[in-house]
Amino acid sequence: MARNYDSQPRVLVTGGAGFLGSHLIDRLLQQGCDVLCVDNLFTGSKRNLDHLAGHPRFEFIRHDVTFPLYVEVDEIYNLACPASPIHYQHDPVATTKTSVHGAINMLGLAKRLRCKILQASTSEVYGDPTVHPQTEDYWGNVNPIGPRSCYDEGKRCAETLFFDYHRQHGLEIKVARIFNTYGPRMHPADGRVVSNFIMQALRGEPITIYGEGQQTRSFCYVDDLIDGLMRLMASPADCTGPVNLGNPNEFTMRQLADKVLALTGSKSKIAHRPLPPDDPRQRRPDITLAGARLGWAPKIQLEEGLRPTIDYFAGAHVG
Ligand SMILES: NC(=O)c1ccc[n+]([C@@H]2O[C@H](COP(=O)([O-])OP(=O)(O)OC[C@H]3O[C@@H](n4cnc5c(N)ncnc54)[C@H](O)[C@@H]3O)[C@@H](O)[C@H]2O)c1
Image 1 (cartoon, rainbow, N blue to C red):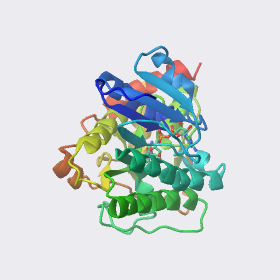
Image 2 (image 1 turned 30 degrees about the horizontal axis):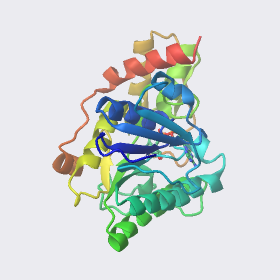
Image 3 (image 1 turned 45 degrees about the vertical axis):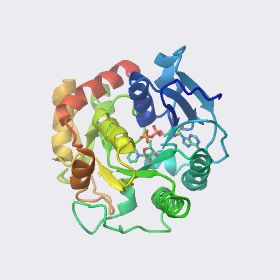
Image 4 (image 1 turned 180 degrees about the horizontal axis):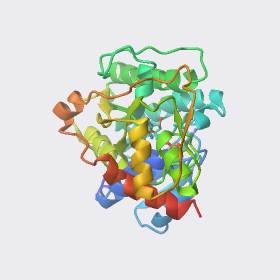
């Protein structure tokens, strides 16, 4: 790509054909940025970018981030990585490679270009946490050899690489620890609770709840999350993170199921299944740091976010 000094920042989004990446691209284009999306379409889809066909400031490259990439940009958001257990456990070696080799390749690119780079890390770096809610100074409780380790440890190693490039090469880095996020363009079969409940309700199938459904989760609507990522990218250079981004409001699985049933008008029944042994009772971010450094807090309430999400699934994938 030839440099054009008159234009708005050129932003690279890896994983841009995925759920979060495609929303981020929409917002960057709205702000007038030039956007280059790089994705190997492993879990993402060109459908998520269909509406951008012919957009003069948007470009797509099919590329696997485990291989080096030579482009000219001003900022990098590194989101490429399968994010749900079904997808990241499909080829665990590829998952670790995507996190680790992908981080090395994107950090190498940022080093060459002397540009800012943001890493989409995850609450999973806290593993099975022993403190609630999780603050960024908690080092986590992660199994290094289990079936989830390819994701958890891959993301932890990526964070290590980001901070080593920062200390060793003076690179400007931003690390976001993203908690459970939902919204339109989520993969309908990713096995996550929001998409599961909505799909079951829309199909009139029983809504499966593990145990009594008293375990709690917190859910961040995608628009809030993208706002947090963009504020982090725009923050002063000393604001490296890691910073938690998520919605601290907790809901029991039963409450979530009831909301989905009410909003879809579905006649689905609740079906209780035995509680899996490793099902956490609670997961909730402490977002004090994001409030203090980024002036960020989620604004969209669960019901408000569930409506467009349900509309998306109803229109795109069911019936
Ligand atoms: N959605 C969440 O709740 C959540 C929570 C924590 C962290 N995250 C992180 O945010 C990022 C985006 O997640 P998402 O929910 O949009 O998932 P997603 O699966 O919808 O998007 C990931 C994208 O990365 C692409 N990708 C995967 N491997 C690649 C590779 N080797 N080379 C190039 N592209 C590749 C996929 O095709 C997909 O488009 C991920 O890094 C994920 O770990 C998401």
